[in-house]
Length: 245
Ligand SMILES: C[S@@+](CC[C@H](N)C(=O)[O-])C[C@H]1O[C@@H](n2cnc3c(N)ncnc32)[C@H](O)[C@@H]1O
Image 1 (cartoon, rainbow, N blue to C red):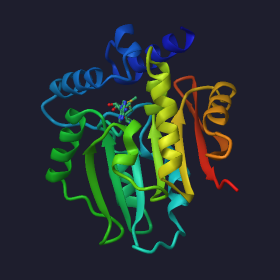
Image 2: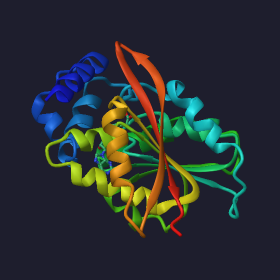
Image 3: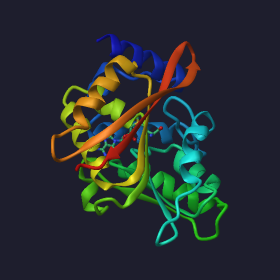
């Protein structure tokens, strides 16, 4: 309950909207997000990216170093923004990655995906590398295996998506599934970054428990502080798959 109150306060302050408890309890549901993005986009006639917590500038120093030196057979680093919403995070990674990337921005809400597709069509985004690619797809991230093969992704970023699942009434199982899927599709050199306001005491324990299955999967888990914003501390949790002997 404390977490929910804290989250409600955050949403109210940062996005100047009233999000009823019902919305918070149902943040694992597609219908909740379809409604959220529909209402949000109807408020203004011009599109504006909606950022959960903060935008790319706050987290670029966690992301860009992971895209510096990974030689790759097909030449493109595979990056997934999981539960992208209408955030500019994915497009910013596409623009600022020093190496050629394919950035896939995936969300369960087709409304968010359509808004982003329309937005990039009207803007000529320039990447560092000519061969970089940016795409927006409707995808339930509990089903990552339907889109990605095992060990095919270099970096997964998750800004607020696992938080949303963990805080909703029936989303905890989905959050575990998403984590397991991430560990399956990540390369051994790859990482999952979760940006969150959840306290390390709780999140590290959850990650360490959910990312281990004897003989099946294991992972190293670390945390760094992103910083403080409006009196709230934010964290970057890094999960890297460990090979099973
Ligand atoms: C808290 S919002 C964060 C949005 C965005 N990452 C940002 O930083 O603004 C959570 C997002 O996760 C998406 N989502 C929830 N469940 C999902 C699922 N199973 N698969 C993919 N996306 C999901 C929602 O549609 C929503 O856009």
